[in-house]
Length: 206
Image (tube, rainbow, N blue to C red; front, side, top):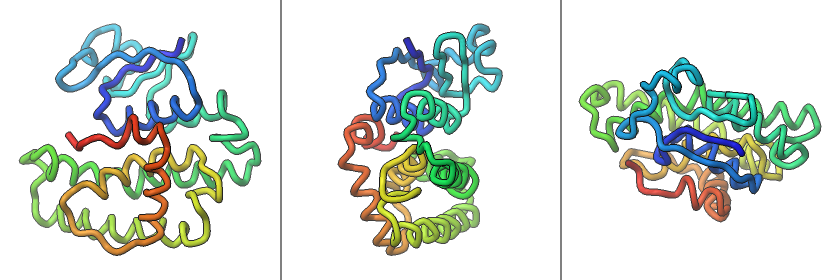
């Protein structure tokens, strides 16, 4: 059986759990990280030398990096659904997954730690303002894409929607200034209708 290490309120663990539910896969999960510890145990370091979450084990294969895990699961268990069989369409999903990591994740993370977790190291006003500005600009790129398609890689839900969808939940639920992005809002509402999103992403920010 698949095993996942990671606490449920980690955005990167959410991606994997949502993906698993979309694929209707059975798995075992062990809490790890922050208050749960585990990541500093020797056995965990052998699995994931970064000592972060999530980590996944599928048979003999051990993977870390959440977007890689989502790609792997989608390709192995959801080829033709979450993972498009067509190389061009698959590349579009991959493109948006990487965009989430490079253009969205750093600023969302900074704001989340400052606004939600009240971290003193994430309270610099200039950095906060820059993050909000950057994100409004970045989200506008996706908003323009979603004017043409229902989901990020086309008119069907794919693995490409999962990482960005998790980030969007945080974006829409933090007390920050947001631009009016109607297509992004409509897409986010579509995601909120999905059971996996409801079960693993739609939770109070903590």
